[in-house]
Image (cartoon, rainbow, N blue to C red; front, side, top):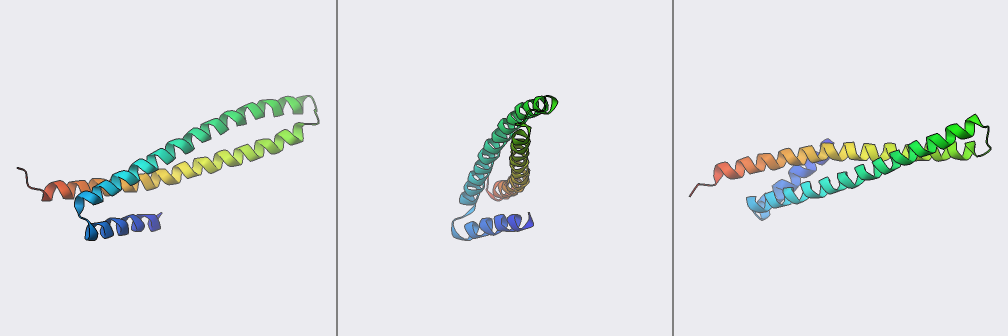
Length: 120
């Protein structure tokens, strides 16, 4: 997490040296939009996987109740789906933390930009 924060700070500093404050704000806004779209897509996938987990759990419970031979296949499928769901959930959480850092960096840059720009 801290490595990404320093990476963001490095990007902001390098952009500041090369192009100026307005471009810095544009870069941070673009990164914020990109992270938001990635988070939304991963969250939607996690919801779809969660629905599949629920359906597979119902089928597995019925197979266990009736001692059906397909219960082992369903149990393995359930484990794979749960692993994929957990992976997507962790990805969303990690990117939400990064998004918050980018958001606060953007807020800092905007406040610095507005305080140094004279009002005409």
